[in-house]
Length: 97
Image (cartoon, rainbow, N blue to C red):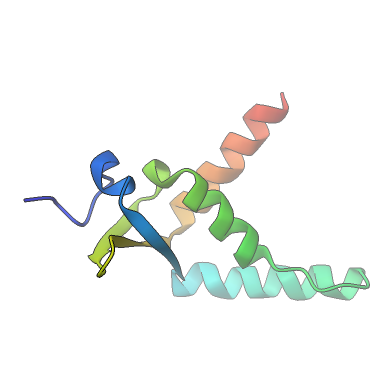
């Protein structure tokens, strides 16, 4: 039987839906960051959406992942933690070098 609480390449082929949950501490920091950016620009900034897209494009990097059975496959739920954010920014920074 599959372990639904860690990355599984086999289950990844059956993912039909993705969900993102943010650790409460990370969520409040993102909200403060977005508010700061919104006040400096003329448009809304949605850092949560961008982080969600990034982490789901590389689910093997997520520290908390859960697969839930659905009728036609699986739903992948990732809880974004501080470690995930740091890892993503580190990957982006190294790609720019």
